[in-house]
Image (cartoon, rainbow over all chains, first blue to last red; front, side):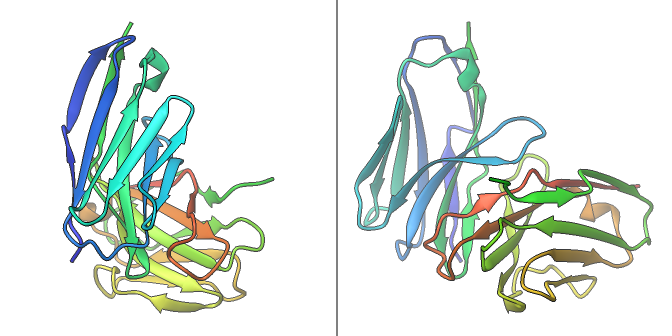
Length: 110
Length: 115
């Protein structure tokens, strides 16, 4: 069974600092890896999707890397803003489903 | 265009009652997924539909849970004899094609509270 772990579970950073969120997974047989954002009481918003053949994806201030062989992904958020405060979820696809981590809960302090 | 919608947004029920949760996927999406998210946890897979048929229901926790998609579009998740442990957010997602490599688009969820 695929296990997805996200570290740290929670973090607070001052506005302007870069954020680094880590995700690891146990089974490297994945189709892709996706990072989502979830605001309190809301659904999931897809941020970045990295296909298994890719190494990274970038969108604006967000950059996600994937090392499939070692079962790791990192989400970088440059120059954090208070509006980046949310929970970030990592999910890997395979076996007819997405397997999610528990999330990184981020607070950006103005 | 319209995204995935779910109704109701919130549902409060008493232990032992029956509930139905509805999901309207994005028009034209053939694949539909149900996930359950408990407090402080990531979503967990329940069931996957390809068209009208349940292609994988291995995530359903027990036989009190059942889901249908009779016309290959709208899906209903049904929970019989609800228990307090069923309280969670139930998320629905759809994707255009049949492969799990396709991007899944999530609805806002139904928050179920069993008293």
